[in-house]
Amino acid sequence: MTFTPPDDNDPNQLRENEPSMHIRTFRAANLQEALEQIRQQMGSEAAVLHTRQVRDGWMGWLGRTYVEVTAGLRDDDSVVSIAPASRCVDTRVAPDVEPRFVLKDVASLTDPALPLQLQAYQMELLAAGVDSDTVDRWLNTTVSFASSMGEAVSGPMSAGTPWLEHLQRTVLRELRIGSPILTHPGERRVVALVGPTGVGKTTTVAKLAAGFRIEARRRVGLLTIDTFRIAAVQQLKAYAEIMDLPMQVVERPDDMQPALDLLGDVDLVLIDTAGRSPKSDARIDQLVELLRSAQPDETHLVLNATSSAAATRLALKGFAPVRPTAAILTKLDEAPNTVGVLSALASSEQFSGIPLSYITNGQQVPDDIAPAEAEMLMSRLLTTKVSVSPLNAA
Image (cartoon, rainbow, N blue to C red; front, side, top):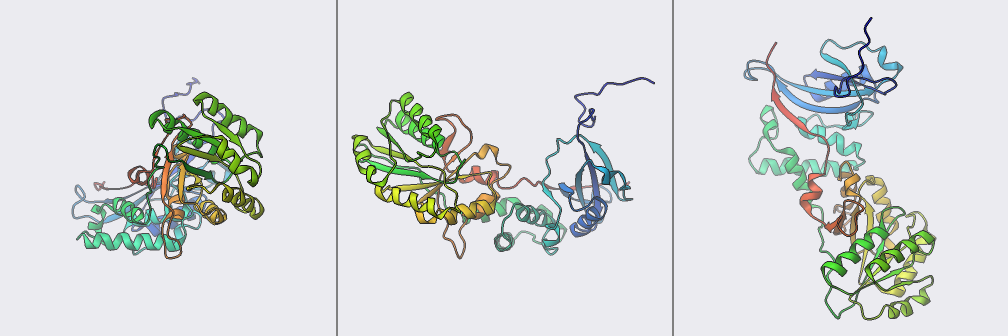
């Protein structure tokens, strides 16, 4: 017997002790039937990796339309006992395939009346935690818009409709893109950053300070009320020393005005605050009291772009007493998509939305920050890619 070493360049070659994923491609008359096959043969933990629409016949002409769904399942004992179906392909590959969404109970909520592409997007929206009312509103608006453009919204011809572009346009209509911070020489503007723990407020303050100090040539002062973490004060002090900026530390509301006066004649005061849990009413009340003494012109709620829709809604509700005037999305480079956080920020009948002022996409100061841009946010809306292609009959 000859031993053949594993080929590191072969994505299908499994190395010893490396976890694997079983990949199967199912074909069915419609998406619901394909998902049911996946559920029965691979279980509800299977992850949908790819969805497309195919036609048999010569070059796709005069043939029937099928749905082809590729699903994966991490290697475990239950997979070994599953026999391949007669109409599916079974392979075994290394686990470098990114799942689009896990099947579980989401697939049962899809609307079979929707075009295939929208059904796939509907599943990912629901799997991302977008509430069903928002999903229904977005999809109905998307279909209405496509219809108003004279595009096919049902039948095989609907496969040629740019559904993702229409969905992006629908979401964008419910988002508010605000303006960045505006400063004028000789007019002091006070801006506070608030938000949950770990969203990157201090680093964002440093990025804004560097941008206004170096690029806009403004006089900037820093003030922190984050005295709960010694490291946070030291971190901001380090930034202040590097950029030669005045800085003050405030612990009580009575100290706020004297500290602002000590910053001198600056054009912009940036206030860093301690991370608060949205569920801690007492801590939020303390923050409200401190900010009331500062009387900021703007209060930006800093949110992590990787947060779920539910976590973002919780932050919006918890920090409502602070009355944020804008929101900053951080860690966009770490977010697989933006739909969860954007769905929570979108306007609805119950919520007028909150304007987005900035996005950050890395840790570099001051480079990795920019004014919020609709095109960037929409390009990262979803991860599901739905393709349509002909399939020649065997």
